[in-house]
Length: 106
Image (cartoon, rainbow, N blue to C red; front, side):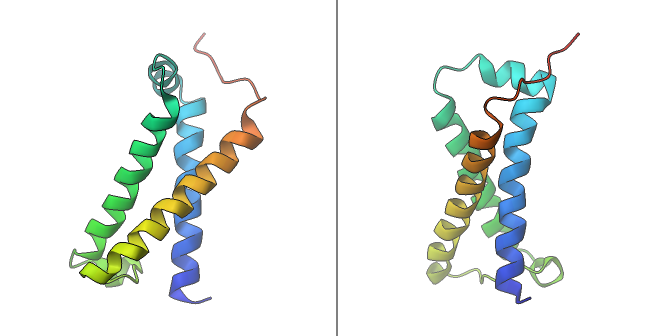
């Protein structure tokens, strides 16, 4: 497995985790359900996640974390790809789980 493939898998997992947290963590779910524009809110979190990934690429720990993008202007396209991967995995998780009832606080 190449580092690029590993990064893609990790970003997909991040998108899945984001969606599952917003669906099954009771306090987060309650907060999320009170917003009218959930799509824009989730896209904002995806952009923040992509931005955090890029920020980690600029950190001294990038090599240890297996981040393969450089902290350059050319890497912005890779950042957009990362945002796309996270958004797609998040939306697929939402689509597969939208008929499942969310856990409610008892």
